[in-house]
Length: 86
Image (cartoon, rainbow, N blue to C red; front, side, top):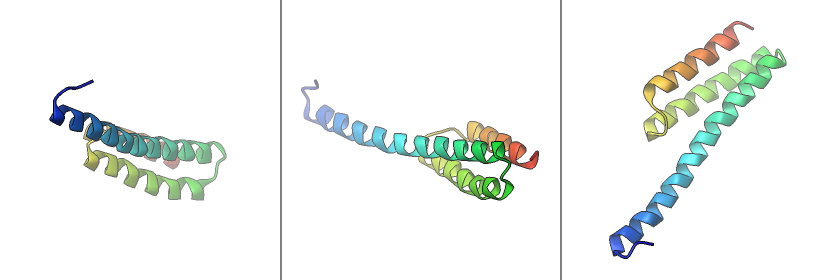
């Protein structure tokens, strides 16, 4: 446990930031799972609509600094590829 007042405050803010980060990462992961499920069920309309929301979620994650730009681009490219191959 920290003794210095500023260190105590940073522990508190770090917890809040970590909670916010898990919200965005879980949002990204869940939307990717929805696309994969739609592709598996061969539902093209649902897959394309989910692709748009997933791409926006990934971009929000990049802007928040949760994931890096290259990994975001890689995820978006792979998702686009799976949806187009349907």
